[in-house]
Image (tube, rainbow, N blue to C red):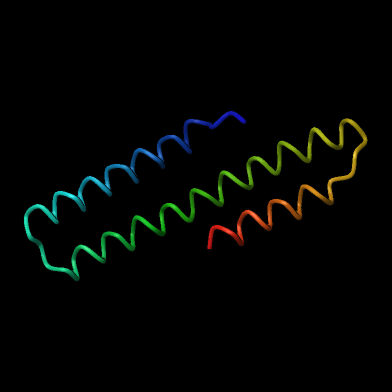
Length: 86
């Protein structure tokens, strides 16, 4: 699968968030502030996983339809991936 620039940019923002959390920890910042930033990073990761799975599903469904194949298994697999990530 090819990952588009939007997904790569999301990952770079998440990387920046996590580096910021490490910096906060190094500075001895309050636990609540660190956890708040970690929660924001986790939310960003969850959203990014959703984008990746949906993009992959869209691509796979398109290819399966072009080849006259069933898409039922693809949808089930995508749902399982999302459920597993939670």
